[in-house]
Length: 131
Image (cartoon, rainbow, N blue to C red; front, side):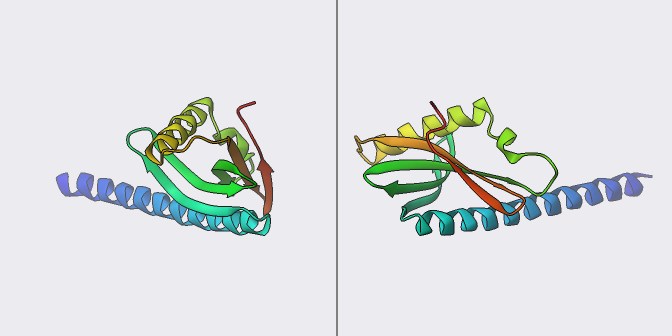
């Protein structure tokens, strides 16, 4: 009976690990697509997956026309709009992480918090989501 219970837990753990791995792979692929899009729009990529201690992660940091862009990438393979995954909580984390980045790099410049939404193979770039 204990073996049966442990085997079920291991199967469930394996499923969770595969599911998280698949999401990570898809997320990285979509971030790659976002970077290709940004470079085509003449953005200079400065950093990717920047992690600010305990504050959160910024998917892409880029520069364009003297403006520093902190960019979150959201995508989904399902039938819902991934823009809804960009929650107020996530926005706060990106704002806090961007402030940390600028302080760490000793930057005092114009910046924008942006969102790239990849849905059904199409890319939408939404600039300055804090307005």
